Image 1 (tube, rainbow, N blue to C red):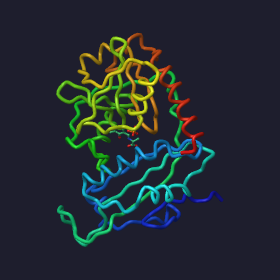
Image 2 (cartoon, rainbow, N blue to C red):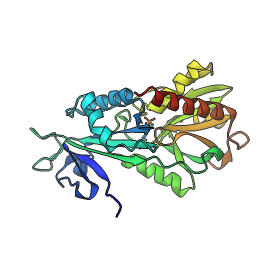
Image 3 (cartoon, helix red, strand yellow):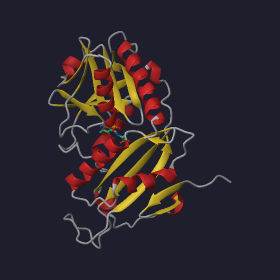
Length: 285
Ligand code: PDD
């Protein structure tokens, strides 16, 4: 018999089928909570401090109490990890379960904490590139919060999937913001460009790593606005996220990106990222 998956819920580890929350939980009723996703390579939590910093920021902006210190968070994560595989930790904190449904914050309620660890499924065909579609970014203007309320994002992703695309490129007033669950990079005139951090994008940890690797390896880069028109002239387009790493785009809105083949910048950056992941994990952080 296969052993059932263990998850963490409100202070206990238990089989996933026994992990239950109240229907009055505000995460369930309102999507009132925040989350994080941390990749785990060779048992090592990749950029743990950066992810925790973003978690702390999301909690501050939503005014949800942080129930644990960084060390406590790490101690909770470790027993869920299988170091023989590439995995990711998913965890979320909601405002908790109140007695009645009321939009305003309840008083004296403890946050609900849920955590699980899943395998990172390799993205089939990554080396061949994927198709993308540009869509109107109709989400709210607090996208810097990693909120569990992802209805806007999932409707956009679904629209991409129904158009045979791996991801959507979101456009606000003519300018690129990000993907439905990723950040966007483009190579234009030989410069690697990504939109600057703002309240219209989630500041991706993978995005920061890519910029650091570009700086350290003399790859010309800029954090700058990108119009959809400019994107259509790009020689390369990528998506970046913790679970898909760097995903090259070879077709945008039904037209090939440059010659329709994965470009040299992607190969270089992907190699740099793979080396960095291994070195980071060997550092035992
Ligand atoms: N999402 N922008 C959005 C809207 C995202 O949802 C994500 C990641 C990113 C990239 O962030 P990072 O590099 O830190 O993963 C940008 C995760 C993977 C998810 O929701 O599952």
